[in-house]
Length: 147
Image (spheres, rainbow, N blue to C red):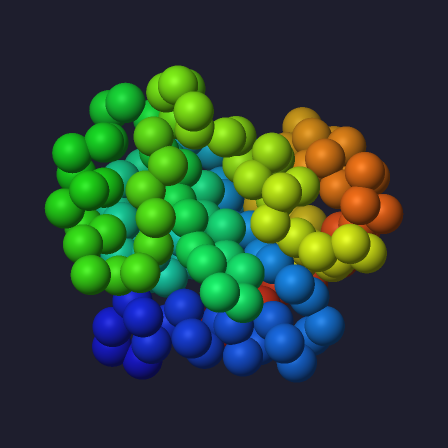
């Protein structure tokens, strides 16, 4: 799995096997550290974006990465030809990660995420959006299995 598209394809295959419709990979570790140890760099490995902050969302047919204004130019360059859509946080018309998940997941959809790296705020926000479609969150650690 040398290229980002190959890594995303492998993640999608693992998602299908695990029975999840989407998967979130935030830039985080269990301590919500500012500087992440190498063992928590899954978002960077899957997306090819090596900025310190971002959240990757992957579904069966789409992938998107949210970054803040510090990283717009860098992310644009690093995501080129990756198949990942750049989401410029806090810009007009750009949904939040939570809104996006609520929109793209199907009715009764299941969103996977690692319970060690997703903050309580992120989980609550996503679940609030999924409630309208009777969606659920499943905690699992697909990223470590693949990289």
